[in-house]
Amino acid sequence: MESLKVIRRRIRSVTNTKQITKAMQMVAAARLRKAQARLETSRPYASKMQEILENLSAVSGFVENPLFKKREVKKTLLILITSDRGLCGSYNSNLINFTNSMLSQYSPQGVELGLIGRKGFDFYKRRSWPVRFNYLQAGGNIPFIQIKELTHQTVESFLAGQVDEVFLIYTKFLNLTVRKIASEKFLNIEKPPEKKEPQALDYIFEPTPAEIYNSLLPRYCITKIQMAILESGTSEQSARMLAMQQATKNAEEMIEHLTLVRNKARQASITKEILEIASGAEALKEFS
Image (cartoon, rainbow, N blue to C red; front, side, top):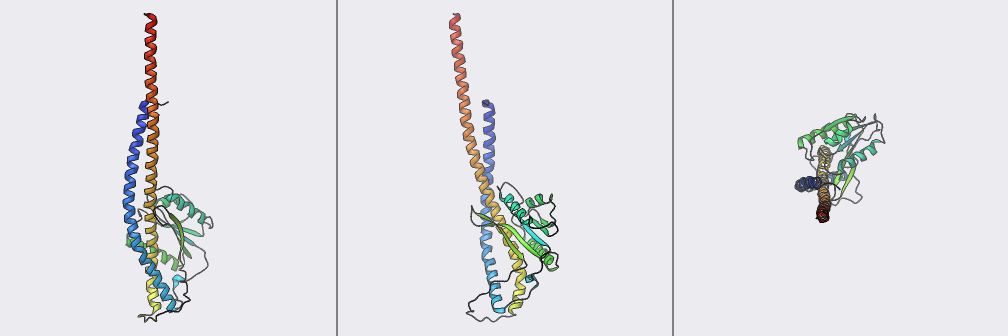
């Protein structure tokens, strides 16, 4: 059995770790509330943008736009959104494993990676997969100007024929304890579903529906990437809060176990001292 000194040192060490994980849990919870508020205020805008495009498509017929063009796939771009920091459980490893399963369907010459977040970059910079771009120090809260630049860079790569299709890989936030890894096609843009029901109202557009549609598409692309980043940032904080909560619980259980071991060791030490005193007393009686 370990000495009392060693056991007390271990208890102090685990207690300090528990204080750190508890503080990190509270910080993650505060950041989660802010990230969730941003996400919930952005979702209606993205939903309404999708609805407007579908309505315009229904009244204007098929709109010709280069972003709708579907061509033979020779090069695919996978945009992976991970976190910059760890201590969030299996959040990043699940994303990387999912991306690896997708990469197994391609050759290194037929796919490129766009990495948002340091964890994904640190993993793939030592692999053979080519990286087209990377954005680090995102923290789930990339400034809008950088999102706009990233979207423009991706769209230009598609229009120039450098890539033939683009997928977004990120974690979708469902609720506090449930997250889902999503793989969504970003480019080419799929046609909105045609509505079979006749339009109840006859709108008058100025300018034409096609012109409005083409002007909204760049904003739609920016919104698509922005929503993926917001979903990922909220999921990251949720995963970190739950991981720190579990770490705090594990520390409490370890402290409880070590306290029991310490009490047993102290009891054994006291029993040993009593036996030594009793043995010494019996030895004195024999010599008296």
